[in-house]
Length: 280
Ligand code: C2E
Ligand code: MG
Ligand code: MG
Ligand code: MG
Image (tube, rainbow, N blue to C red; front, side, top):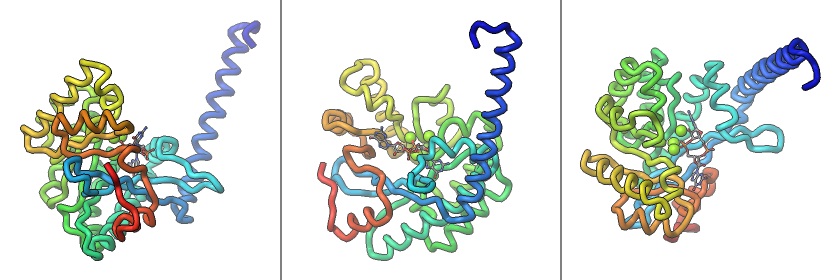
């Protein structure tokens, strides 16, 4: 194809674009069917208090059971946002996670829940009512629920997003900034929107202890969060040295494969029942 003139390349390009559009539309159709068929499921990743090693919360993470394979959210959240399916899907995720955590709490386990939000959901007119409705239905106290947004939420439609999220917070729901430090103007966002927690992006944790600048930045983020009265959660802890560094810097909470991998509900139940424990 390289030997052909420009016209030939253009045709190949057009055919390629066409194939991409078709496959995106097919994926969106498949996703809609998956929601109708109940082919989504949730995994839960424990969040641990680094001082006591106690599991204090779980973060709900969605997966798609597609034939025999488990498809990860990086593949389908984007398309679900583009097609608008994220609105009903997000509602299903919230309802499912709240029901499960309400059940675990009923067995006398003081566990909190974190759920990820897409900007499309936040900008939906009935968003706050929907969350309030799901909480009422599950009996979960609002303060047990944290909603995680990444900084992208604040870029798309800042005024409106901040208004909606502040309204949510007035219900008593907690807010967290996910992937903190990655976005453009992370610090400016803390001025715009009051949040209860920041989750330090895994890219910082990865280079902890080996890259002096990253180590200093991480320490600064931890102190900043604490000074602002926020919970600070380090994400992506994979190695013991990272855990040690974070502890010595006074980071309050952590999440990562070293602590615990995302697990199906049954796995969390084993933790509740004391059949499994997290050793740190
Ligand atoms: P996130 O909210 O930042 O979630 C953390 C991701 O990091 C999860 O990937 C988790 O499995 C992974 N992770 C946790 N610990 C480690 C570690 O130690 N090392 C590494 N390498 N990875 C770790 P996952 O489940 O594939 O989710 C990816 C992203 O998809 C999430 O990032 C979130 O932005 C989005 N997502 C997941 N579930 C939902 C959902 O229910 N709704 C929405 N809107 N987005 C979701
Ligand atoms: Mg998250
Ligand atoms: Mg994210
Ligand atoms: Mg994150």
